[in-house]
Length: 406
Image (cartoon, rainbow, N blue to C red; front, side):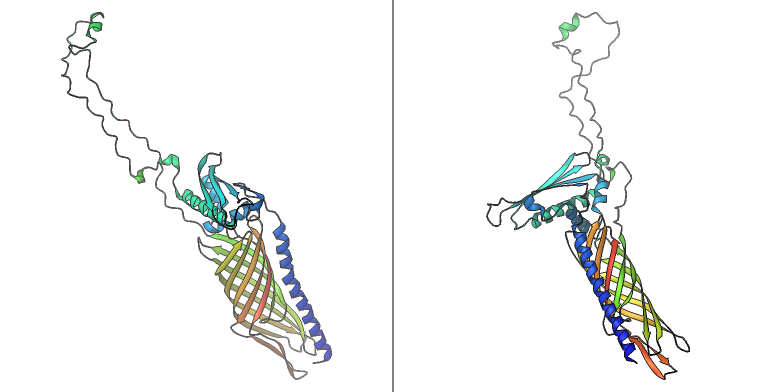
């Protein structure tokens, strides 16, 4: 191979390394700038905190925490049950000793402002994070119970009134004190009155009210099975740069679907396309490489704070590698299967609503190390296009939508 070919290949490798650095630095700049963007505050949460407590959390972060605890969209659930939250956080005074108490209160009200109840917390914690967690737990419990409880108006049962008690006629009894007054009235028509019953020894006691109906009969509507929480579905797309187990600096894109069962880990299914063009050998043979693959993974660890989420997701990959060479007497084509396992670490930043941007780095380990070569018959040489490394690396810049994970 001539010095000219070696220099051209070194120049291409230098360009690829610079592109990979730019691909890695661009997401970091995007995440930092997105962190400064102010998304609108939730309209169903009234957040009241002094300046000393405002740096700990806000209404958006509180709503995000509820989404993670519920495994569902807290805003949609609150609108379905007609609920608003009014939260107040008061820090200890500046002159208070270390370990002074933080005060927190959560008020549950209807959309018309009618109070349902409230919870207050007076905790000896070093920061407001402890009282925010307590308020979030109280709101989660209330929302879960409100989502499955029957409506109050359906539980109202009208009880029949007790039977009326008839008192014995007093005027017809001999010796009654009202007898003289009745004597002065006009005489009634001459009819034969029925014989008056003898006065009872005591008035009969009212009948006891009927027992309350069983709980299953209280609802005015037919019994409904408990609603099962649906899976949360999301999607994302991103740009990829991969090195190691594919030709150096292969670029492409990936589209992924995410699914999260209620209370379970996030499952991902992704498809990607990577391409690379290079010139090999002294004869200037052009080699085109295409890699189509699918990945299936499970996010086993997710940690979140404010509007950011850090996740660790191992996955398995299955794909096909197509290599086409032109510039020889006879063009060549080679096909290879690709099997690999990888572990990705992703950092996402919530942008607006449920939209987010993120950067991910993955370490891949090919199960089968592919090797692509071709023979230059005219020169009597065998040239190697590439040989998969033991370990590869992937950098991805993505944007996506996830209902209840961010």
